[in-house]
Image (tube, rainbow, N blue to C red; front, side, top):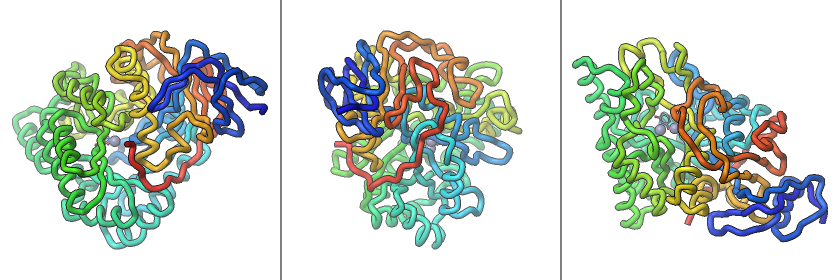
Length: 467
Ligand code: DUC
Ligand code: ZN
Ligand code: ZN
């Protein structure tokens, strides 16, 4: 057989095995895994490198409306460029309806924003922020059937938050269609109460964003989201879990036999609330929700990853420019943390951080790295086995990692639209040097090799289970 591309001599890792093999690629798919493959248009010598499935980041925000005058730092071009340099080949951004816009119109608008602008494949989750008859009776069912098979509900934020009753109504639609519900679990009333109290005593600096969203705010809402899913009889994914107490709620639910999945993010493994204390308003660079916690909760999140309680490790990339009135310095932000746009950039740094801190430091087996960064995302959200695995017949989404390459994370080497990285100066060992999307070499040896925007939208089947 003659191939379009052969990758020779890499250590190939999947979510279950590590083995030496040549990878033969034909027509964008993995055609052969074998020894001594020859005869290809192009042959890459990958000796000394790992070949891993392209990263799937199933939690990113791109071009999402973020409040009056506030603009997200990435559009689809810059976010997907940043993603591909960070070793990713699929992103799953959210579609948020703006104002009175219908859910269906919002999805159409996101498709229009993404079309022709993506360096990696994308597939949209929905955000359900209201429960009128058109949304629950028409738009949501039609979109779920059309392959947008997962959606997020918020338990906090005015204009986004659903009541418990509304969440149950939305979950009933998910049950009828076999969709996956994702929950942002924070108790809105508790935050509101604590925030008013902080402001009235003059505690308005960025740090108080974290102080007014303490662990019980998230633990309680996690417990409630699980209970609502149990009542509705649906599986549930708790996104961006930041601490051990919320994770314990998830473990208890599973011990009762419930199907609850969980995601954590780099910020909960490597940052703390102390970062929000940085001077000259730089604490605002770390404002995200849930907030980073403390060293003990970092350890709890590591423990959850190592034991397999977290199936998903995502970035929650939600980028704003620091030095801008459209970003972290929005009107009022310096008067109160309440007005600081919520979110941090991280799509390009997600994988190097875990590869270095997890795999290279011996905390995480490389097969688990593959599971939590790619395979489980594909399985849980209905993209497997097209995505998330190096196997014959899968899309040839392959990243070559150099485990010997040292790098220092810093703004000047990144490709996102934000003007900072929360990980400035963070040293990593191991780097994604070459990224291949459906057989096309998009990044080669750390440089953009294909300026074409070949990413496409992926329709998904119903959620599977990672185990
Ligand atoms: N939730 C997210 O998932 N991302 C950014 C902000 C938020 O509240
Ligand atoms: Zn959220
Ligand atoms: Zn998010």
